Length: 281
Image (cartoon, rainbow, N blue to C red; front, side):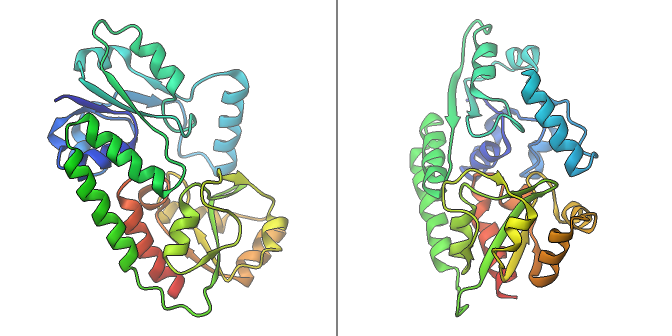
């Protein structure tokens, strides 16, 4: 079977199912497991990731106003790879190819492949997406076993914190975005209480002044698409007075958001294990 993945989470799901060898093409962001880094890239982004948080947000807002997709598909490459299955998504059109864009490309392929759309907004949705990928790849049994193992690991995370610390998870700093979707569930499993979002909520921007009133015990900085080093630089560059006051009054910890919170796949559990240690101090 020939599989093309258009998002990192889907690539990681395929790998966790033991089918990495079936991948013939991946997105420009796919970097895990390491062996996929040599595969052909079927998407490209117009975004310069070296820009600051504020500049990236401005560019994304401009692209949305103008109706320009920041991520595009290499249709010639996709046709040449001749996949049997394409794994897409409908959660975010900012950092990955959206449903409508993919449909327009597929319409020009002579022998259209099967498209599996991932659309998780909470942990149950993630488990369902894993099952959906497993069914498409004729690996339903492997998918069921994988989900059972991930559920068990979450259940086994020890959270001895009493009382449970209040936690604010920030996935962008300029402007500040509160992490939503499955992240509040990760916080709960790690022993904390998310003070800014509920499971399934979309990630939203909120003023630093409003976040300051939440008075969290712990602030987790897990930037969407970026690692800890980048997160530390972004936080150090924040000048907003309310932001500086908030960061001074709470314990601030950093988690690799690119690897562990922004990808709705198997490594969310590893991220929760790390989060439990960070919250516990």
